[in-house]
Image (cartoon, rainbow, N blue to C red; front, side, top):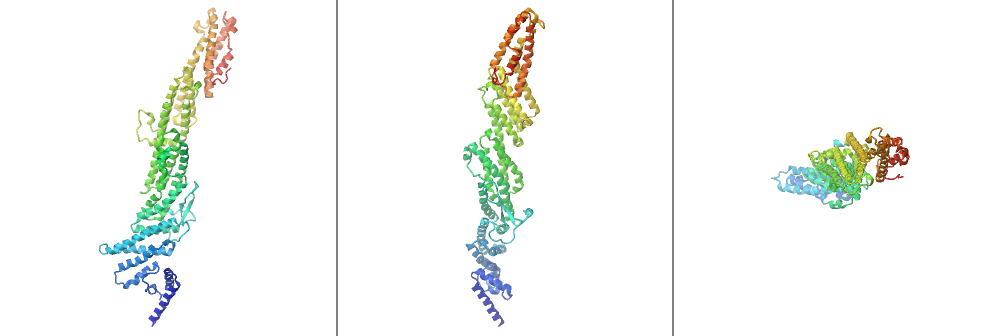
Length: 628
């Protein structure tokens, strides 16, 4: 009677659960409440008449209830797991939309993995094949759930279990230990770091653990990587860089390409300093203690960041036009500065290739920079010596080369690094510019420029004007070097040599122009110091004065349009000419007045006073701006 009464009580409880439970899940929940309330209502007794457990969590109990099944235990277990898992796999709703369902599904997967482990392959092949087929269905559903969790908006969805952690996360941001910083898609360069809830990380980790245990770790990592890749790709695209064929990039105007390079430098820094590290952090949490799958997933997710580097290769392979140097330096420095930051981040087997791509991009840009210096040398050598610069002034090639090198040397350390990268290649003994040293490269360019200017000076019809031309250009080269990093690069000895060369050209000009003028005024050629007092000397002096006047007027006529561009050099040259001519002329005038017959009419022959001769000299080298 007591047993009959208990049966009636159990039947009543079943009826209540069936009446109040609108779904099987709710009915099972009600049965569990009764079981917790009174020990007489065990789940075994309450559910003994149910052929399929209403809730997956009841699977172990269901397995116990089938103890009287005549089939072997492992077969009964697989049958029970098949019913339980099939309900989840066939559901159109996401399993992870309900925490209890997610926990039950994971428990069923764990039971299935344990069962497969217990099966003897030769003896239980039919059962093993059935179990593996069931496991394959679980894996496909787990992949689907993983993608859904990654698409889930921040803050949505329940979490199953606790988030994984490792030693690398011990220094997480204060007050946010339950959130993992992850870069969110951006609309501009003000990149915002969002946070992935720890619950989502825990869910992803739970799925990853089961897939790895089932032997599908690579599939899990690749599914994860493909899902995250869309996010990284969208972030890179929002930075203003889109993949373009090499032909399209090469066909772009340099102005357009300059703008794109500026955007690329910003984008590559954001991608590798913010996006990539945040993806590494997330992968390390999701695949905690599951090497090497964290690295596989990370490499797959960050593939769009590697696509940024293709732009660097295309630009590096472009023309070696010297105007490209400065933007190429910007690109080179961007990749160079990234490498130390990426050394630890991209050190594992599958992500190391990404770091190697960054290093290869830097080397390609370095080779392009070295090629530009070779092209600059060729440009100087090819500059034709056809037309003269009016007045012997500064040649455009001199201005261009010196301003270019002065600007380039603002990045002296980078250029030195680029040149030293080529040190493994033996220099050509017949081509000094092939030396890896930047200082030797620049010194060689200076030699090439000087040689070109020497050739250009030879097309001037008047030798004195050739020297003026060389002085102007030599002085400009020296001043530009002294006022910039070029001076430190070339050294003080080089600068002193250039200054001495300018002085030699100045002396050569004076000899070519003024030596004959001064020689006319010398009196020692006709009888020594007292020659001017003799009658013969007195008669010769007016003729000499006439020749002097003719020389002076010819010089003024021919050289009145010549120019010395540097003010200090112009002043120095005028003073040197005055110091050579004026004392001789002053002495000659004084002797003329003391001369015999000729001296009596000295004023008659004096066409220019000493002051007027000095004024004429001071009007030289101004390009004719102050002609009397």
